[in-house]
Length: 418
Picture (cartoon, one colour):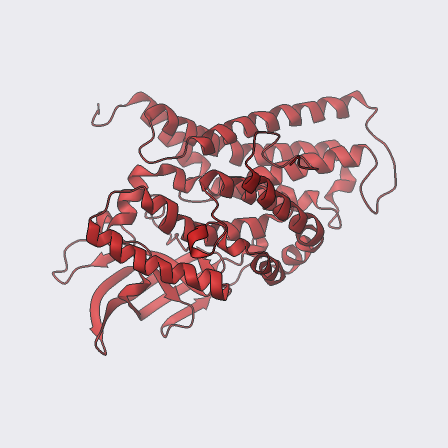
């Protein structure tokens, strides 16, 4: 099979599964997501219609194993598909990441981590129930991280706590705390929250005691609040969520106790999955610029501007940057595995930084090159520019944190200090 389009990741050897999934994502994006994208941006509202399409296409189960009724996408395939969706609607691709990671983490990533036999059996039973919700009911999972502290950056325990309790004969957890920037707030069926186990002896909270638990959206004590009127990524609807003595049974655990902390140490590529959205946005900005300069944008006068050397140089600069991003992105997703080497880890940080900053740089060049008309709201470029600027601000790896990790880990071996 030969794809009739160049995917966001560029031309590269693909499996039959990858070609099928990329074709599906491209067609959904081109025919449905792109024409609607301005609506979610204008109103800062969640793209429910897009999720109806994703549900119907079986893409909510993209990272659910085939043996459990899903599409069976591995890590690299997920990243390719997410980039293709980001090409047409950044807010949909970014929220799709939060949902898909909920299945990717408990599936492929968890399988590669050491567990006791008891832990693995218990986890297998619980995740089958979560997978079934997605496959059979089309359930949507969110993944709130941020709390306004260093926790989301991996520098402190989460302030949202879970205390062991039994209620009505059911063993479970009483959850208290608050998440901010909670994408899919008010839209998700389950919130996969990261919280810290609060022990009965009132010992200080410990990052090693991080829990990953699915909280049903209809739970008593769960409230969504706050306004949502940001510069970009407006369709993510990332409002605040408060948990006040919210009780959930044991079986809502998405990972065994303490496994998230081990995963965060061993599987750093798990935090790279925000990058595909921004690679897709960069491709969209480049595609628009080429079409605009060729006089081929739908609804616009067929005026060609490609003959000016300054325009040609700008497109050349955009293409050079895009190809560098694609190459680094491709190598990084191909290397994803537990316990990467130091060189692979440093390349991961470099790739995340390059994509997040590069997407905005390409969008900036696109605006300058296409000129004043491209600022108009009926064209997508000004939205792509605003969306692209948001990537470098997102935890757990902001652009600043990537540079911090890259420089420190390049100069220091584990255990070294001055």
